[in-house]
Length: 366
Ligand SMILES: NC(=O)C1=CN([C@@H]2O[C@H](COP(=O)(O)OP(=O)(O)OC[C@H]3O[C@@H](n4cnc5c(N)ncnc54)[C@H](OP(=O)(O)O)[C@@H]3O)[C@@H](O)[C@H]2O)C=CC1
Ligand SMILES: O=C1OC[C@@H](O)[C@H](O)[C@H]1O
Image 1 (spheres, rainbow, N blue to C red):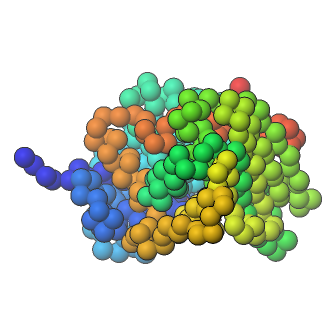
Image 2 (cartoon, rainbow, N blue to C red):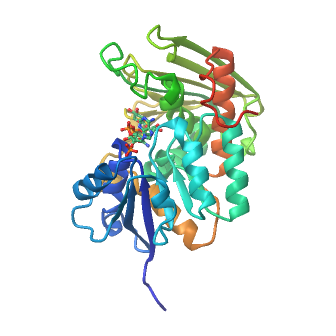
């Protein structure tokens, strides 16, 4: 029987920060994380500027031969050697970039937030279905081994019924000293806390509440959101949203800020009989602890058992490779329902918070 790993050939779209760390990660030998069934190959990079694409390949993949570089993104979509396109452009460009990649017949891994509204996402999902191509939001946190361990702990009968998920991802972006055109501040790039940071507190609510077996994949019974805007550009600097899961008697209290650091601890999951505490950063937690009510001892998990080589973005790449190999168009772990739920929640929070994106930014409305 052949034990040759399946090779997925990647084309990278946009040469910014997240594309650089993703590219470095797919070049990490998968065996270092115990993966032997798939491998990744970088074959193309596209930037709005060909010089930047070449510099990107030279800097982040210096030992990879034959990487094609393009001065536009279409070069990557139309490259016959590319199987899957990774999209690392700003939020507001995800829809058009993912659409064009799918139309060219490529599989797609698209950065978070997958689009800027649910209508854009629905259009992409219909296209992926029509073209029979794999499509996934790059919700990397869900694929880290620690996420599975925390989910298992959250479903441990010793803790009893789940009550509350409190999660925050914040960061001080020094907003008074960065250009108003920075993607975190510019409404034309979907700036603000919710769209950039909101996916992370939400992923923990999805793991602990939406995925909880007793919840039967029911959506939240109620969504409540509130936003404080910065006078600089009008984007949300601080957002809090609450998700009620009435059927399991639980609630998520989620927040994010672009001008303050996260509280410590940033993630606490409370149960009838105890709690799970997770330290910063919630997008890549190093460890977690479980405390049962009435017991002095705290059970500590990690950090040693969750260490790996690379930045942690490669686990989601392995999921894409396996899915493509197996002819799937959707991930089982981060399926389309979860990205759609995320976008529907964000649409509702922006509606309640009165955050309207500038005209023309949303490519599909309703
Ligand atoms: N999963 C994660 O851990 C992270 C995810 N992200 C997500 O990745 C996306 C990009 O973030 P990040 O890499 O930090 O951003 P950067 O600003 O560093 O890079 C974005 C790149 O997009 C391209 N681009 C295309 N159109 C525009 C435009 N109008 N303005 C600016 N850039 C443009 C540029 O590449 P070029 O010039 O080559 O075309 C640019 O370098 C966001 O959606 C963000 O949410 C960000 C950080 C972490
Ligand atoms: O995905 C992300 O994770 C970390 C944040 O600092 C960053 O702005 C965001 O895009």
